Amino acid sequence: MAMANKAKPVVQPRVPEDEHASCKALGLVLDRVGDKWTVMVVGGLSKGPMRFNALLRLIGGVSHRMLTLTLRGLEHDGLVKRTVYPTVPTKVEYELTDVGRSLIKPLSALSEWVQRNQPAIEAARASRKLVE
Image (cartoon, rainbow, N blue to C red; front, side, top):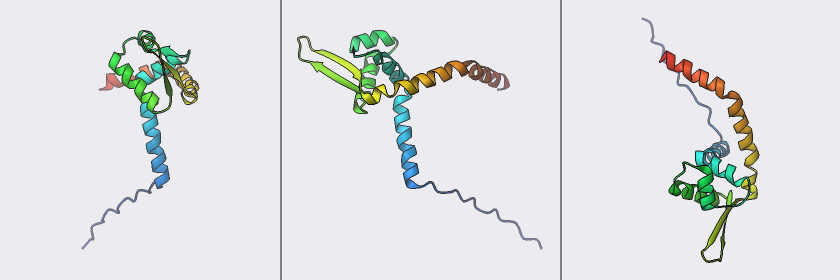
């Protein structure tokens, strides 16, 4: 009588806690900086401080609420500084902090990568649609 082979359980290597925490932190930051409107706001503010309505006009397509939420998130994360001037009416300007300015170079590099590889990506997507 033959004995049935029992499948051996697959043991997944455990990720060290500090590595897991680093990955989680990276994911949270990428959620912020990879957001469509964040990229547009950082691009707009890379030219210098701007008022809310100037950013709204520059970006185009973003709602008032979405721009407000994006700016608040960027300010919360220390990427944007909000300055309120005591004038009548109140003047508010937004500008990139040093950390925010340090994001310009990586975003520019990513933009260049996308422009270089967009035709190949689109071709792959198109060929995938033909198969499905």
